[in-house]
Length: 513
View: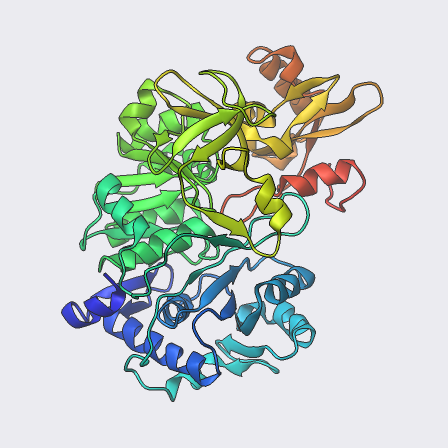
């Protein structure tokens, strides 16, 4: 299906509602405005296969632009609203965007980008600031009927750039040109989470991230309603579940941690009984955190593991997880393989790189070397994660290979220590990195964001060190604990660990301590 279908059958039903402001856009309005946007794109000379760059916060016009691009056959690249001028310029140039759409809220950065991208049409939602034209005004003069040559477009999102510049991910395979072709995520939502036209889906993360973008657009192909949070706040998320009678939502572990750290009386204040199925992804969830979420919300907390690359998808229910604690699931769309450095498969419980065999094809835009590095001799593809399989085929992630610390010749993965430290009541957030050490090469450093900044200091560092050593191997314990008032974390929950690590190696100006 496609939102245009529901513009005919349920025209006055809200397609999405902005959670804080309450602004609702109906399926009729979404259809008409996306048609107008499609006409505007054609009028600017854009044809199927061309690119548009979207640099927005969670804005009421976001979905209207996305669906205009989708029904025009365009590649739409969504940029993080936290990017710097040089990062935005790079992605606009690299993706070949012919149109750049931003918002008044991001004008300070966008205006500095504008002169660096000559020849790109510039539009702004909200009150426009030169040299950007008003997107709404330009769109308003266009017909509300479909363009004559509708064809399906799709996203080309950029990797987070753990090392070097981020790369656009181009998915391969046969593409159905019909704008209402079956949506793979909608099919998964129906099969795994019971989605239907009555679903009310809360999207608490920024739309420029692959998962919120993909899942919420999938909801709209089913004629259901998306509740889009303009920003994430733990208590407000609970309030919106009650207010809008939310039935489903996608989270990341950071969201869980922040909700669990709310006072008990706050957590118990809201009626969450409408929830029927939620799911989380993006990072391994600490076992104690997930145990508490299942205890709180019941056996409706599902999980999946996948990447923007679309090369594989693992899934696990709450019941399966309770029998395989710590797992991210079994392969659903591809076979999971664990391989050694030589690319050869390893037996059960042996740790190595996680590969998908027989999954979706992809390439990194303009980077054949990185594309080749993601494959082994069998053509299996990897996202760079390290993990292992149990005898039942359930996957357990260890960490990203790029985050590994080598101390005295021993390989140490930070995730285990991070998962432990985040459960301490005085810890609000934590990152574990490798810092230079004259004798050992690297030493394990835990950078902690205290729940109360007044606790930061040697006494808390000593308390945490003792606490960790009682629960974890001496080798994996931190040799040093530093404090930050707030870790550099993306709105999606993704931690910019590279910035923290680089500060210890003199490559970043992030302030620690």
